[in-house]
Image (cartoon, rainbow, N blue to C red; front, side, top):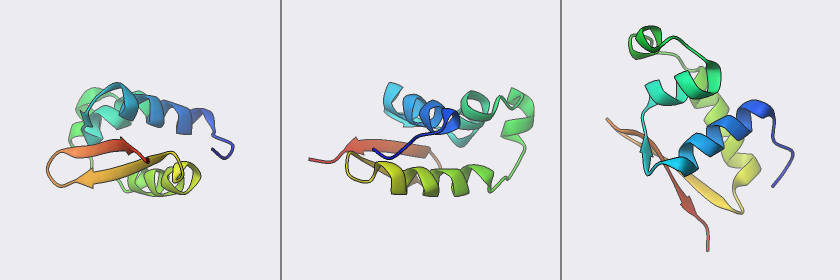
Length: 77
């Protein structure tokens, strides 16, 4: 893996800890957004960061966006 920032590590750990992670949960865990704020916000910040994280971990993990669910991660074999 390429050099991961603290936020990259938070996102990846949240994804690896659970099978499916909602956008709201990722915003709370990685960005420390207040719970109520993250559920009512349509922010692209997370999408951009996930895109950058995908490039860094593409050899080990595949991060998948699931419509209506959030994100999942699979190990590349």
